[in-house]
Structure formats: C-alpha cells, structure tokens
Image (cartoon, rainbow, N blue to C red):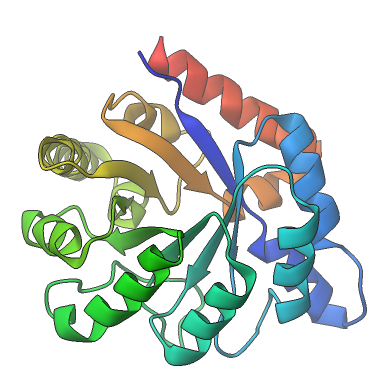
Length: 242
C-alpha cells in the first residue's frame, strides 16, 4: 500500500507566541524540527485576523523550508494576492469565521461555486496545487472537481469527536467519500481532530494520500517533545498502512 504522507500544521506554535508577543516560540523552528522528525510537508493557516500565523511566518517558511508548504487560506482577494506573491507548493481553501476558535467544517464548494471558480483558476494557473477542505459528501466532491481543484481534504472533525456506533458510521462516510473522490480523479487528503487514538482507522483508508494534523501534535509536544510527538504519529500511520 502506498505510503501515507503526513503534513504537520504549526499554527498553534504561533498561538503560544502570540499569547505573549515577541518572537518565541518560532513557527519556523518548529517546521524545521517537524521535517527532521519525518513530516512530509508543513501546513500554516494565515487567517484574516492574523490571530496566530503572520505574513512574516509565511515569507520565512517559503524561503527556508525544503519540504512542501501548504498555505491554508480563506477564499478572499487578500489571501489570493498573498498566495500569488509567495507561490507555496499548495493552497488549501477553507471556510473562515472570525468568531470560531478553529475551522468548524468544510467549505461549501457547491453553494459558493461561482465565487470560488475564479480564485481557484488563478491559483492553478500560477502552478499552485489547490485543495478544497470539504465535508465527505458527494456533492462537494463533484463541485471541487468542477472547480478545477486537483485535491480535496476531507474534514474529519465529526468523526474525531464521535464515539462508538456514531464514529463507525462517520468513518464509513469518510471511506465512501475517499473512494468516490478517487474514482473521479481527485487526490484525497484528510484532517481535523486526529489523535494517536483515532488516526489509524482513517490512515487505513487506502485512497487517502495525506493527513494534515496540527493541534494534537503541538499539544502532545508539551509532554513528550515535538519530534517524539511527530514520530509517534508517523509510526501509527505507517502501522495502519501495513
């Protein structure tokens, strides 16, 4: 079975920095440590209100990283301009609500199709690999393909928060969506809320090519260190693949 890639989201290193101001801890340093520990890519969400990742962080990451940078972004003119300036390897288009603590669900690619289409087209034309962060839903998969995005990231938040029978049903929903998305030519990624305890069932879905995980890894780093946290997640993902 094909190796599953791990993208490490470093937003919450910046959250700790912003709690006090200054320059410590450094998201760039965390990204470099993540790469050394086995991350295949780095994800950073530049929010409109700059609550954690800053414009300077994106510039530094783009210049210094030797593994792919995935810029999470709202579908706005401001963010599109920033993406076209820095040309990250990938951009993941996400919904954004200034009142939310974290991204609360997938973007409505079907309902916002006309607004999203020109933004996706400009990013793709610039050579950026665009992904749509969506719910595991056939309508959203079809819309993402029609938008011209080659990749989707399936939102696993509902699965991660559920227990028992409900979690099994939501896992099946992700599985079905991954298979359908692959069948129509999309590359399938997944992420949100994944932990040591729940990652393996998602990682075992062979159509999924990449997982993006952040908050949990940064939280575990407080107790066991960042490199150990990432290596443990990498180990669990690899075990699930075998």
